Length: 157
Image (cartoon, rainbow, N blue to C red; front, side, top):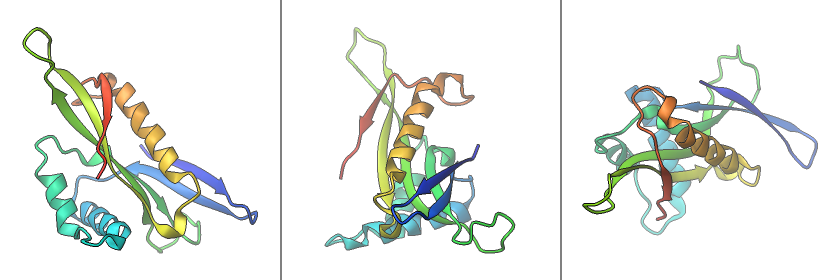
């Protein structure tokens, strides 16, 4: 389910963003992997789009809808033919943590691949995505096919 977010900038202009999960198709996932690679391209050994694709597809519990993105269309016209661009992203990883033989396993949601395009930084977009991710983890027991997540863990690179 997509939601709209309006950000007012210091110069008085407003930008309209759409929050959504990725679609479970190779085209949407490829756009996301290219976006992530472009944002992390400043690193001395930048990851390629194939790094993010492997990271996603090799995860046995991957779920495209748990890759949360904010998209932006420069002309802000929903009927425009101009394509929405991914400008910010966060990924929720589903994991099971063992607490030892006396305790049942705990379902957790990890946070990773948090990134925002340099042209859209300092607007609170990652905050919007992280709040959405935490809400998904809190509400996970009511989602079909998603086990309740008792805690969250942050993956930092």
